[in-house]
Length: 344
Image (cartoon, rainbow, N blue to C red):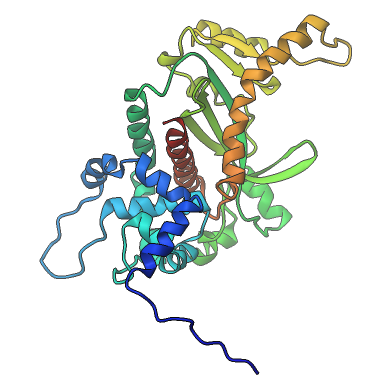
């Protein structure tokens, strides 16, 4: 049996050499570290999270910006809490991004979970998202020459419920057996819903996003259960800043009532893909117009493509819409950070 020996002893600068090689190979976290000033978030995090200790004893909390960067790291690679802890300990690129050395203490999975729970309880992710959006506005990256809206599914682990239990959950009730067992109830998602699209069944939530047409930056989002129709949150996604801009969407957003509201209430110019019907097919001019609209509307698909391909997909493992909103909000914020780096 062969035995393998080290070719040489570990050198003082070996870690630096390895990190240099990772940089040359295109470590995306290097670009993120250079392109994003995470200190932007410190004041808000301290303001909302800091609690004066009752005494001098006990362990000091981890740095808030460090913990926030861990959540961004987690979303970019779509990792669970246990895997996040493991990968920070294991990967030099993760440690470099977090400015940790091999001698530093790494937050464990429970600490990561607790930090995210605090953000959820305070609805803080939306404020962090808005803070970064304000920075993007200041940099002139949001151009306000048009808006696009679309939605994508965010799946969660499927629930193993009986038919009767699913029926009760769908009507907003909590089955009695779950109420009597707190541990079981904690593992049941009573907010997620089933839906079908093109014959494929999905279970979970929807990420409804509005993006800036030119920059493809997400400017607002709403999270609903998966059964909510794409067009339903449209009016809530639009605001005064969108006035007098073209509004692009696919044929799921068609409807005379909606288009009238878009013009009268939101003062946007609808550029919605028209839909043909069995006894009323699209005319050639309508097809030509649809083709022009699609060239713009398709830009929002690049966002969902980045999430699926570069961020390892949009499936999450949270329970309940409140936690899902936090994680999906972090997903959208992480996308905007990488998009900012790309634009810059």
